[in-house]
Amino acid sequence: MKALVTGISGFVGSHMAEFLLNNNVEVTGTIRQRSRMDHIRHIKDVRLVECELRDPFSVETLIGEIKPDLIFHLAAQSFVPTSWNSPIDTIHNNVAGQVNIMEALRRFDLASKMQVACSSEEYGHVEPDEVPIRETNPLRPLSPYAVSKVAQDYLGYQYYKSYGLPIVVTRTFNHTGPRRGENFVTSNFAKQIADIEKGRKPPVIHVGNLTAKRDFTDVRDVVRAYWLALEKGKPGETYNIASGTCYTVQEVLDLLLSYSNVSISIQEDPARLRPSDVEILLGDATKFQSETGWKPEIPFEKTMRDLLQYWRDQP
Image (cartoon, rainbow, N blue to C red; front, side):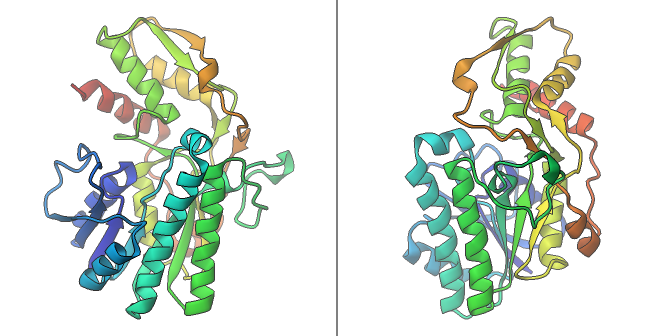
């Protein structure tokens, strides 16, 4: 069994590689010239290929050479605030890369199963009576990133219907754990706490919107879900990946602070507030669970402990 993981050097990609190798899958991963290798330096037996996914020739060459059985398409500009600063780059990066992969599969007439990593951000504005969110909920995206993911989502469906490509789309709600980028809220808090404990910064943690409610799943549960999406999910279908439990950002912060012995004060930073923010993202993963048997296994408290320890271990 051969798998291609796009964006293998990223947060989810590195965990995906470990999961696949533990299941005796031959793994090839795409990187770019400027990719940081910190997350995958310890992983052996992975073939890394430099490939610019926005370049159709590079992608076609790679797909033609590997002819993968499975494709986990994880590469993306995935940070919502960045999409406000660079909307066209975000949309071009996220849409073009996927189209190039699907076009290559079509040209080579390959039956590779492809998982497209989309996002709960697609739902955007959610009315109070629409929670928990099912796959049938209207999509009302509130950021350029979310719009790019809606495009990826619908392109996956379109290529399945038009060309029969076996594509499964996953809409994953917030996920976190060790190696999460420091720009993301849980990891940002954990890094700030670790830096305070090491005496690198004053005992003040800077925060944005603490009232937003989010559904968090451990990344190690998420990559198992992606595997099951291709093993047991139905091509052409879209599945929510979520824990079904909600925490406010304030509750996340309080939990992380409870793991530290240092006295830390909290200060709001206006620069961390977004032009528009999604008030609540609580997912209903019943459809995915019933078709694949998946359910989250790692408690949120362990996820947060492991994330804080990850930052404590950084030099």
